[in-house]
Picture 1 (cartoon, rainbow, N blue to C red):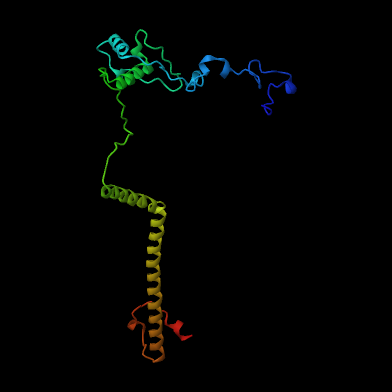
Picture 2 (tube, rainbow, N blue to C red):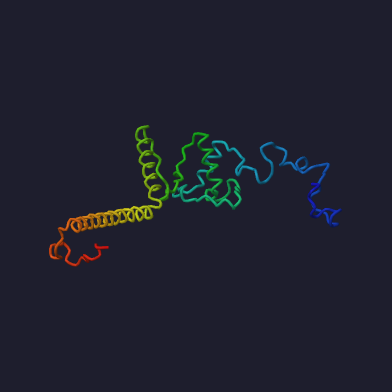
Length: 217
């Protein structure tokens, strides 16, 4: 490529040793396994490309011991390239060959007598249920109800603290207002007694410790 400045002759005097930018005879044309349309290269080949006759399948199944079970052969991890050597000795221990042959048995109508591959079920799998509309609607409503409950509980401690403070503040304000209004009523009554000359001595007062000379000002 023109913008591939690494290892180009005009940039650092180096060349790519194997791969040229323009080839008159490309490898796709020159190499025989690249000619078929379904094979684009070694990476894209199916693992087992051969189709066997019924007799060959029966002969291959006769190689497998009776105690063998399909579920005992695990699938190799993704990073291991899938390789199948075909029907060679102990071919049933190769996962890809085994399942290719199982598929060919299914196509040919030959019964597979070595069991099935079980899918492991973890604790984190939810079993799949078919439910009618009403039940699924009830489940969704219940779920959204709890979602709303949890959303409304965000900041709940602060809200509770504010509400508690508000209640105590209102209570305190009510006490304060009651005190000041009753004090005002009391002073007005004492002043009225002073002006009407009804107030004789301190013992008639509801509060014995009142300073009566404060009213004379």
